[in-house]
Length: 150
Length: 150
DNA sequence: GCATATACGACTTTTTTGATCGTATTTATA
DNA sequence: TATAAATACGATCAAAAAAGTCGTATATGC
Ligand code: SF4
Ligand code: SF4
Image (cartoon, rainbow over all chains, first blue to last red; front, side, top):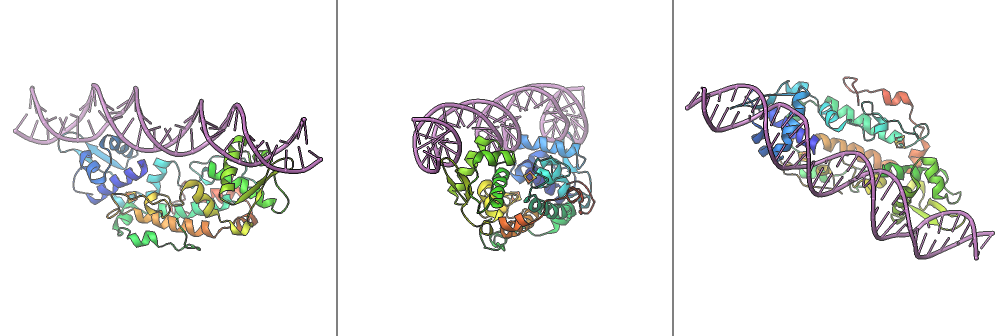
């Protein structure tokens, strides 16, 4: 949830970009996140340099960088440690495995990692915000070989 | 780990397909998995119909289906619940979210889900086993926009 | 009958996640 | 300058999930 909550808050700030700070109470309400929990997340985002804040009356949080300059990949990577589906194919969170030299299915995970990073590191908050919400049918419509579940 | 351990064991059985059962002691040793833990995993695999077993001397586990007929996607889905990176874009493990109607970044996750399922549901154990292990350089070589970490 | 397998529920430990609380500090404004 | 409203931040907690262990029952081949 942490990563998801962080993204929710960030996109709310993208929407309000240039229009002054938003108090955490408002961020929590709008995004359906426990307020006290969101405090920690916002603090992380601040320390990472993506948002800034003003205390006191009329204070709150606002983006510290342009929405075009924050990539989804960076955000996820900071909260989850890495984008890869498993640590043995990650760079930032690499963890050696004893089976590496002969493991066969590692290649499948590598393929997925490559796609995930390609997508996530090209997607700035601005780009993503410009897109339309997902329609239900898009989730249900599965184009994999057997039409099976996901 | 569970999913990874399951895959390790399965691929060992693929390698030995048609050459009699392999005792769990051997599976645990070869794949660096705690033996007692692997017992539970093998039992799951058996109940799911992918492997079968023989007790007693000269007993052990063996594939119950042809390696061409078990897909990686099925395996992962059974152990992890779903392939999607987040439940709101999953079919088998779908969980409603209050933000769905206006969430923007959900589309990014949907894109990833589509790729993951496409790859995983087309990859049979046989196909994957036929491939070569991953070289270190392939993991290090990142082709995302900024050449940054993964 | 004995050695060697799997079968399987109960249990324990560890890690992760999600969340709460108390209190200090800063700021605008009346 | 008092006060109300905001962030700052460490301490702590609880629940859940994941990882791993144990004891013992049962089946099989020789
Ligand atoms: S078994 Fe293969 S995929 Fe799993 S961690 Fe080891 S190298 Fe990576
Ligand atoms: S906030 Fe968006 S991505 Fe996250 S769970 Fe809700 S709909 Fe899905």
